[in-house]
Length: 403
Ligand SMILES: *Cc1c(COP(=O)(O)O)cnc(C)c1O
Image (cartoon, rainbow, N blue to C red; front, side, top):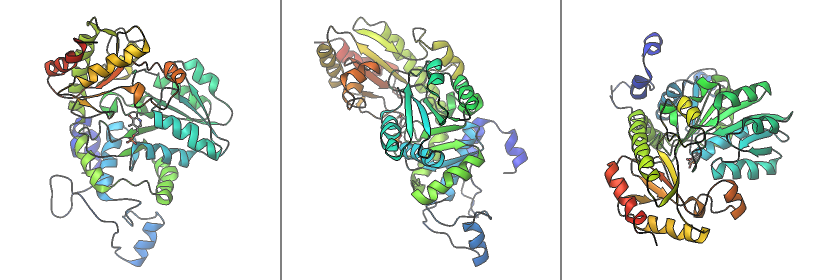
């Protein structure tokens, strides 16, 4: 497609059309290229391609046409110049950190980040001399106070798991840039269908393609979207030497997932809001967390930042008089499910229910869990595409018969 025409197309169109050129066979659905190597047209071309001075694929660790289609399509949806795919969301974070940081550099993160992100940055990278501070998600002053002369990166995730806390992307971008640092946003929960951090000033968008981008719970994938300079200058060299390469098969699956991302996110968010309102009215439920509820502490910011849509994840607390009873009641609700899945994943068309205190947050001490706001009665629901009445009925099985 020529560049002038491409520039006139809307995001919805690019979500189904953006890809590398068709092969001479004229396939309508993008081809799945399973090859680890590429035949070079000449020794001279091979040399130029390896040096990065000529377009063309050389070896499967650094690039693949199917993966390139996924990268181009995701970059178009995020409004980014470029994108680099990785084997998983966590390997995207590793690629970013290896590309941007060295011993002595400092990172500021939200303390409500995904658990493995906290372990990777606060634990594994600390072994190599990278320092980090973890601050309350929505407290811009705390982010500012944590910045030091060696701060190179601010890393936020919004909304967070499992309490859907929201941070102000534009405010954090200003803080980062005033300090000469970059802002990365983990856009897993909102996806580019609802939230485009680069338009709000973020430098890097990180994705776990495993979640809503695939959207049907099939494959692992990850990606970083950023400027061309960051992608080719900082991330590609890490991919070449460290090899956190996305499998072309997985890239193809997620590429197809992107075609329905927008309608899935909207339909699942509608279901989530309906479920949140229903739960909020139940006498057995103490509290519901979802950005579309007016009771959400950052409701207005979330609506502004997320195109007026709250997302498909909510959490709720079962009413109880002690942590022991809360845990027993939450387990009762989860064990009574007959349609929805008891599963810690999210981003599927099937509704997934989880008990964060004993799973994703199970490695934390009770004090850390309290600080994260994850009580024993908390249940997270990643709402799918089932009929809302069936979702409610399945949760009511346990909620109506609490021990
Ligand atoms: C799942 C997840 C990740 C990690 O992604 P993987 O693909 O599982 O490696 C990172 N951030 C958030 C918010 C996630 O939900």
